[in-house]
Amino acid sequence: GVRIKTAVGRGGYVRDIYVRRMTMKTMKWAFWMTGDYGSHADNNYDPNAIPVIQNINYRDMVAENVTMAAKLEGISNAPFTGICISNVTIGLAKKAKKLPWNCTDIAGISSGVTPVPCGLLPDQGTENIGSCTFPEYKLPIEDVEVRTCTYRRKRPAI
Image (cartoon, rainbow, N blue to C red; front, side, top):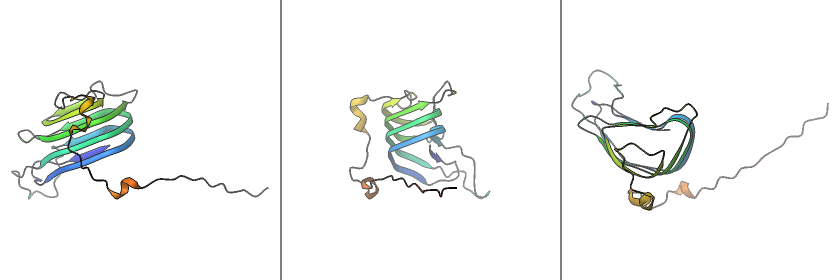
């Protein structure tokens, strides 16, 4: 699925991420964000460098055969904020986890999401699907049309 990972000591930021019109199939989590990744390039990192994760938007997405809808784990005293998930349908696998959403230290909203997200992403109702900030402009890739074709090769008679 969609994965954002960081840890205390990395600093920097991840912000203004927009993902839309995506179909995902067969995965452990549709969405995974963690502030406790625990990996550093070396031992000289600054333990006071706190990464900032904000304004992460997912819209108009479908996922199938998912074990767990989301694992969203921010950083204690520095939560991930501005998370917005709207018009998203996650089809859980037959052996899915009983708790489809695991959320700690995050803040945001949701609208039109199935299964219903955790309490830290309160539902704004389907009439507010467009309430999250999302760019109005289109990227050139959005106008690309995918065409499929087939080719059959005749096999020589034996």
